[in-house]
Image (cartoon, rainbow, N blue to C red; front, side):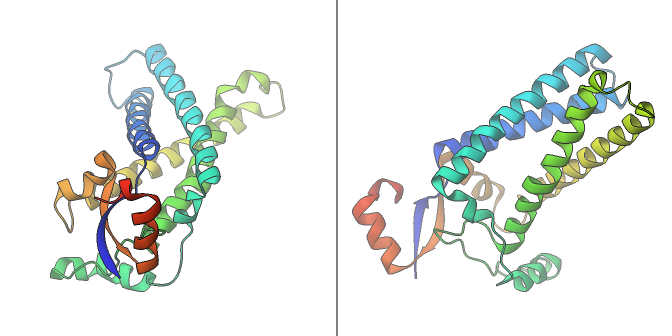
Length: 217
């Protein structure tokens, strides 16, 4: 294996990442306003901002899903049990003892097993849960005449809020992880310029040198 500086995050991935981050922050800000945690926005303003940000994020996700499957980058989000215990041990114990991270990025495996599992659960459980509950709540006027509609609406609101707070916790953990291990700059820069240090097999290195030399730093 050779450690090389490789552009592993495309321009679209970086645009997707930062746009998603901005929209989630807007959703958190407007959502907290709707629940009365702050009064920086009026209720109608908060509803409008929350709705616009939500639909923008849905549109972004539609493009990202298309991109993931057409480029086969969905493979990076498939978790594996190989190395999972070592990563769990590192984050629960080794990181506080100054140990080195047990996982090295590979060209076809950007995320460690724990990251892949967390991102997969976010994408196939939390995001669909919050989208579906949010849309059901938004279009309440279409089903408000069914029996016990108000009680169902209360349940939908509870699910939506619970999923939202779970995503807030995920964001907080994500930001915290940027402060561990390497410097904050080293964690963030790959999502700015796309380059990171990864392990390349001789075959991968030869392929990139021949067909995609521009991705090598």
